[in-house]
Amino acid sequence: MAILVDTNILLRLAQPHHPHAAIALRALRALRSNGEILHIVQQNLVEFWAVATRPLDANGLGYTVEQARNELAALKRIFNLLPELPLHDEWERIVTAFGVSGKSVHDARLVAAMRVHEIDRILTFNTQDFERYAEIQVLDAKKLG
Image (tube, rainbow, N blue to C red; front, side):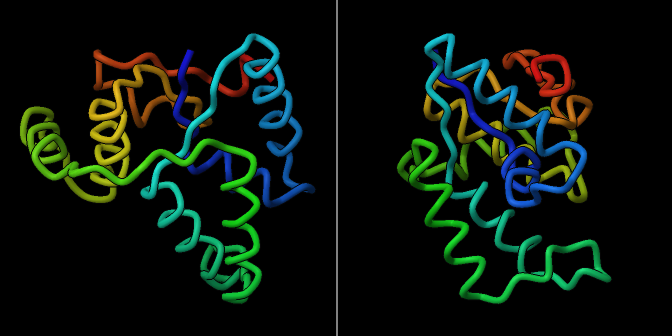
C-alpha cells in the first residue's frame, strides 16, 4: 500500500500548464482512491530544489529560494515525508551491483531509500530509469492518469 513518488511527478505538479501536470494529478488521485499511501524522501526534495531553482534557460523552473521553499512546504503537506535513514550502504550495494554511473546514481538513491523503508513501488514518468531494478515495481503515471 506504499508507493514512492518520483521527483518528476512532483515537478509536474509545480507546473500546472505542463502537458504532464494533469496526467500526474489523475495518477495520484487514482492511487489515493485505491487507498495507496504516497511517500516522498529527502532525495526527492533535494532533486526538486535543484530543478526548481535552476534558471529557465537551463531546463529549470526559475524559482526564487522563497518560491522553492514554499513548494517544498506544500509537498510535505501533500505527501508523507519519510524520515532520513542511513542509505549509504544500500546505495553503494545498488550502484555496484547494477553498474550505475552518471546521473542515474540519483535514481539509485531513491531505490536505496525504497529498500530501507520497505517500499517496493515507485510512480514515475521515466519508467526506463528504474527498469534495471527487478526488486521494485515501476508504475507508469501515463498509464494511470
